Length: 394
Ligand SMILES: *Cc1c(COP(=O)(O)O)cnc(C)c1O
Image 1 (cartoon, rainbow, N blue to C red):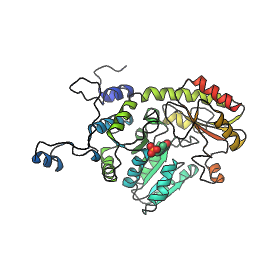
Image 2 (image 1 turned 90 degrees about the vertical axis):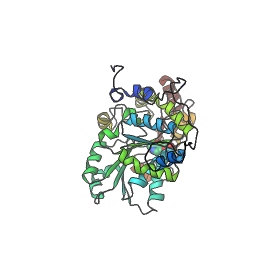
Image 3 (image 1 turned 135 degrees about the vertical axis):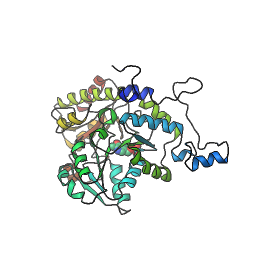
Image 4 (image 1 turned 120 degrees about the vertical axis):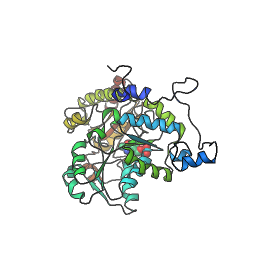
């Protein structure tokens, strides 16, 4: 039990996120108003110069990141990952691209499967800018050290990965990277900070698409970086000059979402586990990819580094691509849609959507079978979700 006088860092995540971003306003509102402003007025030129020349703290222009609604959000984001600093962005890709351009300039080594947008940015933009980018398959991890032959590189990965939920060992990869003078960035979107804290396992930078679990309602596009003040500072300059800032109104919506993140994630975890168990027992499902199932390849590692197994899972149905499409099309509660992490359950077929552009041979090498369906398990009643899947499979 936490006592009411305990310091914020001793409190649990739910208490911290509900109470520690609070600004007290003159009217006693429990939460801050939205600062929908681009600019701030100064008393006189001397005060303006004091701020610009760094003698006083203050607000000058919102795109610089100086806006109370955005800074309050960032305080909440930092609290969730227990990082020294956080930066909020207009999208997950804005956070990822600014981070890669800042800390990946000496070369980026990626391990395992990546979100399609990140992979496209690495291939189309980073390589065009002359940044060396290497992609290692998950089973090529042992080659990491040889690709870190010059210091100052960035190791980048996701765990659990899309769509096969493959688990990578954050601590082991961070140890090798640090031995070779590299930084480590982890996209923690699938797990959320409630289920996994990469910084505590040795990562240096944590990224999120806040359009997913952090936002949680499929109604905002946003992103976040959590890291040390030292590593955040140069990224903030890229964000400012690329104009990637989150809007104050979106920041306030995201702050509101964060207050229910711990309780939402708990229910996502519970629902996904129930769905995974039911699918494992279904005769037409040949494989279930869920970190929480003891039969899953990455289960032991997931148990070591995660505190919950998340709301995402994939199933492989008998009969290949067409059979899987028939199941997806027959679902009534699950919506056929891309994205994830919202209160509503979604289904997508990787071979027809996110991984449509790559050859069947490479899909199979990445563990993405023809009959795979990816489920984002929402917050409906688990029994209704299982009944929906059962009728669609029948
Ligand atoms: C959605 C997603 C992103 C990109 O985020 P946006 O908010 O759409 O820009 C990055 N990484 C992962 C793992 C994602 O699922």
